[in-house]
Length: 350
Image (cartoon, rainbow, N blue to C red; front, side):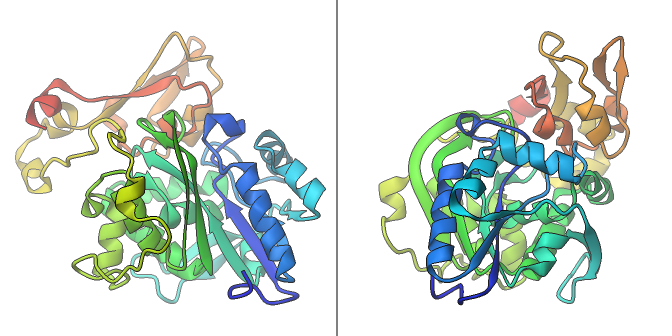
């Protein structure tokens, strides 16, 4: 840790805190990992602060943050280790000098005040970007309720990935440490299943970390849009070489049969879409409300960036003709009441 933190520096530890969730739900970075990194930072003479902004359904307010840290077990970590909790609700619009797609964006204050950022993602699948890893985790630096606006602005997953890499290059974390002790497979990042891998994956490059994660879970790295974008920008070699792996070998820790979200192992060829007016309905995975689980909390309605969800008779209803398939509703539903359905035509093709 002394390589990355000098005495007296303010260090932001940025976990994945999608929503309020107990550690065993594997939605958030486990407090045990955060505690371990806090102790290493303190030993190196740094001043650790734990901070994030919640998923797109929640406002970035002091009260929301307090509840989030408490539910995820991080208030106890801060209390017992002496680390600070980032409770300020402010943000600033900043320039992204290296941004290719986004030139200005809103970033939470605790990230802007930090001398060093240490990125602490959770190893999870993602219904839109396929993987939540080093690059995607830094989207949490954008305040919660502002996130849907970027989903609406960039409904194409490649454009969205380009925006994520813009944020990653701006944040420039000194170290990325992934919680893969309990990972999430299947319908991630909020409704998947726990998979015990017993792994901690760390690296100085979020792009390289994601490349290694993809190989551990048995997914072609170039099917992950953020990895493709990193290759395009020269952050990774074209042939995906040049990443030195220390410790255990990838083969020794490979997670056989790791399940990805429905319909995300293969992508339908984009060139064909303009020639098929029914492609969106027939060939793309879509969200569906489980009436038995929906309690009418309204989180999905608040998070939908294109207002395609409304509450009817105390339950959510999705207008599929307006849905852009960003799956924010699926990602943030605390009751796992929104599933992802692969159309028959898509299943037959892939």
